[in-house]
Image (cartoon, rainbow, N blue to C red; front, side, top):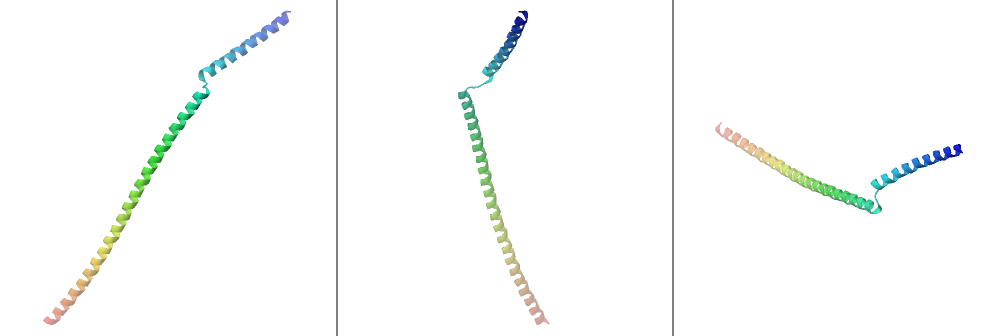
Length: 115
C-alpha cells in the first residue's frame, strides 16, 4: 500500500504544480489582457492618430506643391524678363551699330570736303 500512497502523493504533487502554473497563467492574463471593448477603443484611437498623421502629411505635401508652383512661376517670369532684356540689348546694339556707321559716313564725307 505504501507504493500506492507514494504514487498518489506524487500525482497530487504534480497536480498541485500544474494548478499553480495554471493559476499563474490566469493571473497574468487577468492583469495584462484586455476585453473586446478595450481592444476596439485602442484600435479606434490608433486609427484616429494615424488619420491625423495622414491629414497633416497631406497638408504638408500640399504646401510644398504650392511653393513649387510659386517657384516655377517666378522662374517663368525671370526667363521672360531675361529674354526681353536680351532682345532690348540686341535692339540697342543694332541701333548703335547703325548710328556708328552713319557717323563714320559723315566723317568720311567731311574729310573729303576738307581735302
